[in-house]
Image 1 (cartoon, one colour):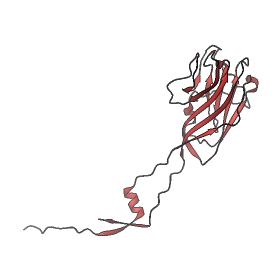
Image 2 (cartoon, rainbow, N blue to C red; image 1 turned 135 degrees about the horizontal axis):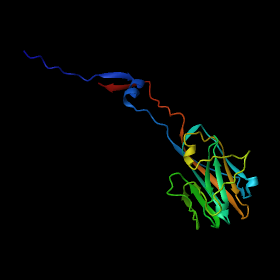
Image 3 (tube, helix red, strand yellow; image 1 turned 45 degrees about the vertical axis):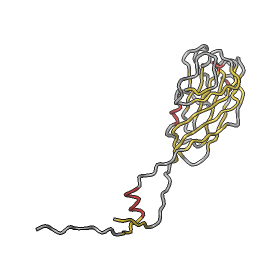
Image 4 (tube, one colour; image 1 turned 120 degrees about the horizontal axis):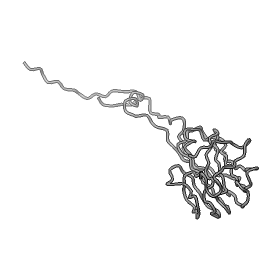
Length: 216
């Protein structure tokens, strides 16, 4: 004897929003955002005994760095003498440029340093505006030394990658130190800026009505 067929009749049920969200929605990731910050304190080149520093103050809510790019505008009669060091608010540091370009003479040259760039600044000139890896030449036409002074200026060892800033909070002071390791030829950094891609440390809130209806 066969059993009678069973049928199901749809019925409306009230479910809490929390229950719907828990079963239907994945976690919402924090949104990354890239922001640029420019310096207002460029300065002249001097020899290593009195390295100037230019700063950028980064403000905002705490976040975690995913990527940092740096752009400088530089004029120099002998680019290989230019040593440039970036120091972040947590003390990490990277040599952006040292002993590259050899005898290249540059005027208002725009150099962007990006860890995803195709290659470093050329060892010898001519040098053109563009995007490069941080470049610290070992050797080169002026011996391959860095002449950043000691305290209160940062001492080595220094990193050779902008990834040293990843995972840290960008808030507070970033410092750009620049020196001429011989002090013979004139030059200056006329401007510089940071582009920082960072994730907020707290995820956005998801809100909904107190109840929701569904058909089961």
